[in-house]
Length: 279
Length: 300
Image (tube, rainbow over all chains, first blue to last red; front, side, top):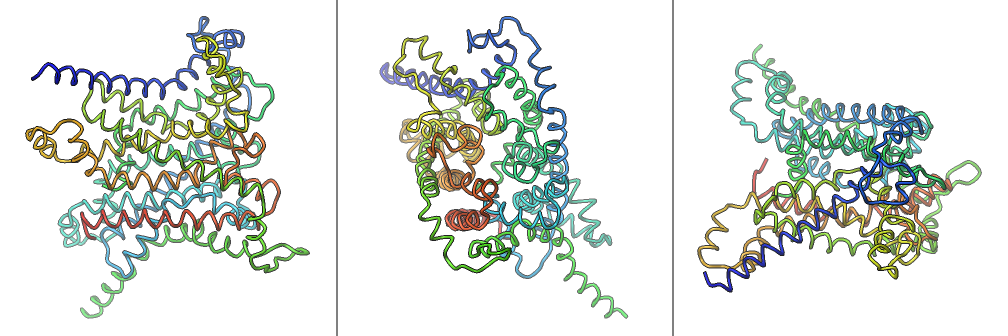
C-alpha cells in the first residue's frame, strides 16, 4: 500500500470515529443532564449545570414522589399500557391468523386498507372520537381509553403478526388439520407457541408507544385522578416556578421503565421497528 | 349424510375467517372508520340553536382566512426542512457504523436511545437546556461566546429552528436503525466483489450501498414527512405551547386548541379533513412502496 493511501485510510477512520463520537455525545447529553441534575440541590444546579453532583442527595426523589400525585399517574399509565397491549395482541393475532392462513374473498384489499391505517395520524380522529365517546359515556374511563389505544395499535400489530404467521410452514398446519385439529385449535396450540419472538417484539414496541403517548391521554383522561404520567409531566412546563432538580428526578423515574423494557427487549424492539418497514 | 357433513364443513370454512376477523374489524370500525365518516360530516356542519345545520364549505372558507391556521400550515411546511437533514445524518451514521468502526454496537445502542425516550420527557429536558438561564447559554458564556446567548425557545425567530433541532435529534435514530438493518441483510459478497475489483470507499457507497438502500431511503423519507405533518404535537405542546405568539403553532395543536379549548368542533373537523387529505397522499405512496417490495418477496 502506498503511504498516501495509508494516510488517507487513517484520516478516513479518524473522521468517521470523530463524527460518530460527536453524534453519540450529542444524543447522550440530555440524558446525562437529566441524571446529574436529579441529584443536585437547587443552588448546586444554578451554580454548575453540567458538572457532576457533589452531594448526591436523594431529596429530589422524595419530592418527586410526593408531588403531583406521582403514584396515581404512574399507576394510570401502567393500567392503560398493560390493558391495551394485551387486548390488541389477542385481537390482532386472531385477525392475523385469518390473513395468513385462511382463504376468503377480498383478503388482499382488506389487508391493504388495514396497512394504510398504520400511519393515519390519531389527531384527525380525536374530534369525532371525542364526540362519540361523550355520547357513549366513555370519556374519563379506563376502558374507553384502552379501547382507543387498542384500535390504534391494531393495524401495526396485525401487519407484524400476519407477516410472522406466513413464515410458519403450511405443512405443520396441514398435518394438524389431518389429525382433526380445528382452526381455533391450530391457532392456540401451534401458531401462538411458535410465535413467541414476534409476540415479545409486539409487546415491547406497543408498550413503549402507549406509555409515551400524550395527545389521546390529554383529551380522554382529563380528570385529575385519571391523568397519565406523560400528561402530568407535560403540565410541569407551564408552571411559573419549577424546582428543576426535583422535576428531573421525576423524569428519571418515568424513564426507567422504558430503559428496562428496552434493555431486555432491544433485539426484539429493533426487529419490530425494522420489520414494520420495507425490507 | 356425508354430503351434509361436507356442506357443513364448507359453510364453516366460509364463516371461519369472519369469526377470526370480527373483533379486529369491530374495533377498527369504531376507532378509524366511523370517526372518519363522522369527521367529514362534522366539517360541513355548524351548530345552530342546539342543532347541527349543513353549511356547505363555510368552515373550510373560514379556516383559509384564519391567520393562525395559515401560520400553523406554513410552520408544518417549514418543519419539512427536517426531512432531508434527517435522511442525510441517518445515512452517514448508518454507513459509518456499517463500516464496523470500533465500538459500533455500543454506538448503535446510544444513537438509537433518543428515539425511545418519550417526547414529553425529551421536550421538558430540552426546554431546560434552551432556557435563557439554561445549560446551553451557561456553556456559551463559559467559553466566551456571549454573543450567541439567546432565549432559544422564547424568541419568535429562533423557536421554530430550535424545535427542528430537537425533532431531528430524536427522530434520526429510527433512520439509522432502518438503514443499518437493511445494509446487514445485503449479501456480503456484493461488497467483497466490489472491494476485490479495487473500488475505493466512495465508489463502494455510490455504486452499492446507496442503490441497495434506495427503497429504505424512500420509505424513511415518506414516514418522516408524515411524522412532520402530523405527529409533532408532543414537541410543540411541551416545549413552546405554540408560542411565542404563534411562532411555533402547528396544525395538530390548532386542531387540539380549536376543538377542546375553544369548543369549535366543526372548525377543528374541517382542519382535520384537510390534514387527513394531505397525509393521505403520503399514506398512499407508502402503501404502494410496501406493496412493491412485498411483491418481490412472498405472494400471499
